[in-house]
Image (cartoon, rainbow, N blue to C red; front, side, top):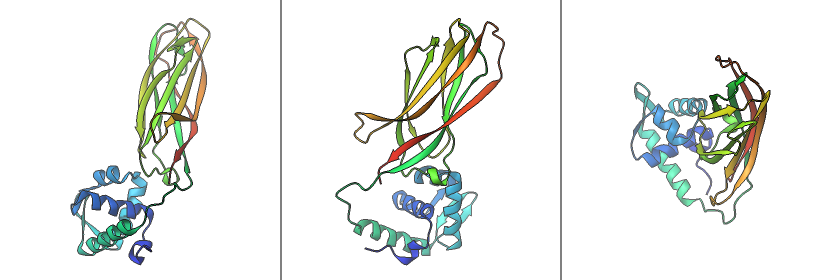
Length: 227
């Protein structure tokens, strides 16, 4: 079944917003709920909602609350029919690979034998990095010449929005410590994971325990998304 022409003229972000309304079973939703429920970035939401408003499929009924019009309900009905009549593929299509930027923020100099907090996070996805569904991720962090010497792990769901996790590390009484980060993605069966990338940073260690200015280090990692 071919997608109706009224839907073919819409960008993918607008289709995602309409699909969110089909799951919502309501005519009105706040922009924050739409962004989260449709899995869009703020930029993607803006692109999609502008086209829907231009087409008179939705209108802003109050501050950041968008209501589906009669014309919009007809288009949503067409989308439901299309999604319901489209046969499911027996085999998975070719995977899509998505690049996301990982950022590590640490003090420029680590104090010896004193714990400090560092941050690991992903920047908000741009349009090319858009994920159709949250990715089940694992971060491993370890410190050479410090603690945690054995990798410390943290699992999380990566969406298209900015996220951050904090860790505590302690450098030993050495001249330098290496902070090492690995990023992995769980496979669909949840029993195993694939390595996505990572980084390491060699930081000087000092006996001076006064607060140090932070520094940010970044690297791109590659996620796999089945189509």
